[in-house]
Image (cartoon, rainbow, N blue to C red; front, side, top):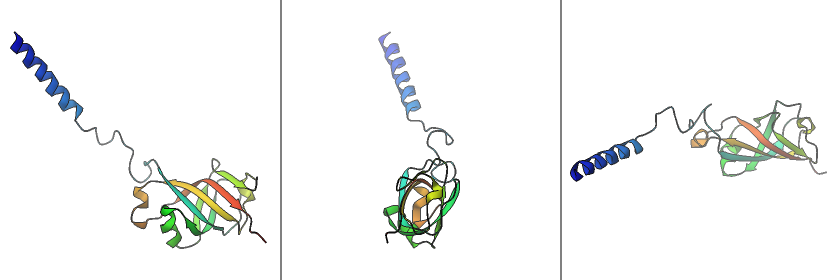
Length: 140
């Protein structure tokens, strides 16, 4: 009787272990690593000068990149000026002004955006949507 119970418990343990290590289905679990389905997790910080005035959101601002964080290096080498999307959810700050229409050509800016790691691989420059824009007018 003890042998049957021991074999039954061992069989259940092996069955449970095989279920636990089974891989999840390909379409379930993690989001896509690149493209439309990816979840951006890399912060890209661009510093530079605006090449045009702002307008009401949604809009695209033209930015001449002069620096930024590690992930901005490819954007600095790309053809200038770059187009950065600004949406209604983008936080804008220009000396207390919060409206994207207050952005002026020549302003020094720092733009924070997010991108997927796979989209930034090998020096690629995916299109960016700004999460935050901090602008300062040109000092005289």
